[in-house]
Length: 636
Picture 1 (tube, rainbow, N blue to C red):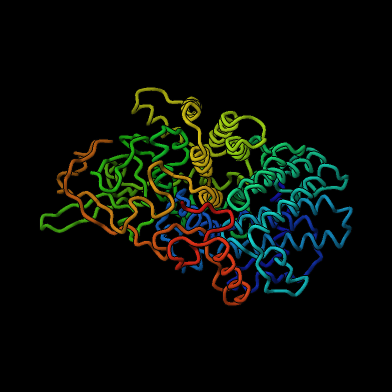
Picture 2 (picture 1 turned 45 degrees about the vertical axis):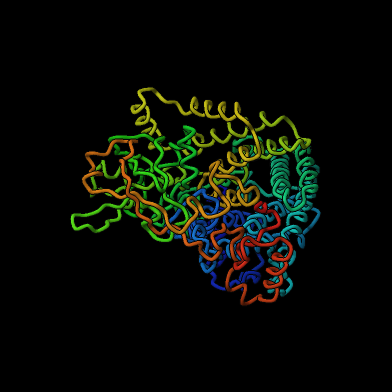
């Protein structure tokens, strides 16, 4: 389907001025000087901007949502620093969605309705489905946002829209999706042409494409229904049960003919829009995105073979990151010490989430030099060729693999089959009327999750890492066999809601998975590690962390043994997390852009006060970002 984007890309780009916008005031204005445009190009544009640019994806998914959810860590300390005043990072995704994806979809609907509404009814339905994906991404991050009046500035002159409640956005959105779904199942009207449809344009005929869109709409209804369990449990159950048995069906695989995958390519587009923009960050010079500590530790504890696709050491070659595989000793499953424990040399050291300074993010130990001075020994961001192999293999932070998940041509999962079965598994656990029992649905979800890594994120470094692990263990490891063992172990134990949520959270580990991971955590309070609080500051949950202290000779490189702690009784209290602006509570939302609070002040303030009164706040309520959303699960 790659040709679908390439064939119209130049046309699209000649029609739009895509310069960055600094003023949120202009979000609902339309700068385009012509309405003489082939409507299908606007659909392509909307999905290209749902993908976003590297600028937005870096800030939205990898600095803000992903680190709050614990999926990623970065040295930028915005989301995981629990701070409010990071407007460049707070505003990146919401501005992009309203300025481009939402506005273009609204304009597309207007053009189709004015032309011939009946003849274009299938196209309008597909546009409505596209819009709901865009609105859901925005509301899941920010809460109440413009919905009814969004994107109408060009048509109505209303540039300062009121904010709709998240509950209304969800419930009205589901009703619109149902209408669109049902129409696509019966309408004889033509859908968009194959070269205008970047999601299902590769399917064989018009009826098949329409039914694929209907299935996508029904799958989104399933997701939105389950997301509402804390806000309106009865509505959530009715919505999920209706979608689960609807004739439109659900996405049940990761195949391109069934799942909603946004295709990508290496060449073309402003800001490289045709590429997987999140992956571009992982492999490009703007990277420094690390595997979340709890994702990494769980993978190590459970011998999760996804670790070979997700985790890596990396070196910088030119302007890009590439995996480093030059280890002399390797054990992907050797878990690093927790704060307050002696240093243990391991292959994959996690970056610590929530730190207040760079050493705390990657601090491994403190040594005492010959003059009695403390010397902080932190891990490298990446492999440095000036260091020895033994140093690098034990002192390097674990980056998200820039070759696999960082492949710029990897597809973007809009909706995959594994998500369907995770939701059905949770619904079955709740004794709702959905197909199959808990075990059957969870097994299928896990199988599809494990399947998508070798299917879509293969890389030479995976084989090299697995070969090194095989040599360490003295056996020939096989990804599929390890995945089967993992799944059987999960299914043989106690299956409860926390387990389902945790496995679904882990399944979000893709370049753009931070958004969905944030929503899952926010809705469930999922314990990322059993026994460790996930609703407050990441472990150890205090301003200082205890770091082991050594004489340099005790930790000389030739004395370090893979996986064996270096004994010590001395520890140094080093800064870890000061609680940010939220008294240590993880934010339940991303803050509104500063320009919007200035230019649309009355409506923004009304939305803020309404949400505080309806949903309440964590702690003393000193910061708006601790305000629960409609779909948030409150802390007991």
